[in-house]
Length: 90
Image (tube, helix red, strand yellow):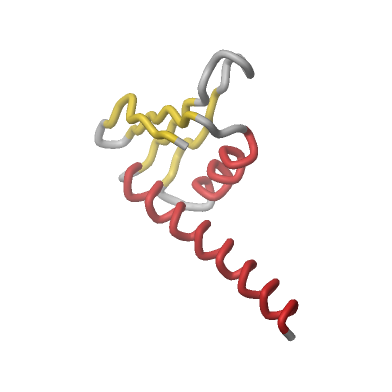
């Protein structure tokens, strides 16, 4: 995954996310929309073969919202992994 900031304003953030597809972006958008300070979270991938997805976030503090959302998602995945490992060892 490679992330390129296309624009960053007070309440808007636009990122190009290379090497990812709908799977991670759908999850990220859904998690961002759980944050009540996020007004808009969406992504666009105009062509499945020749373009990279672009994530748009409109929020009170879009960079903070993105950071907190990524941390929450990471914690959820870590918890899932711990539960699976516990059941396998136990």
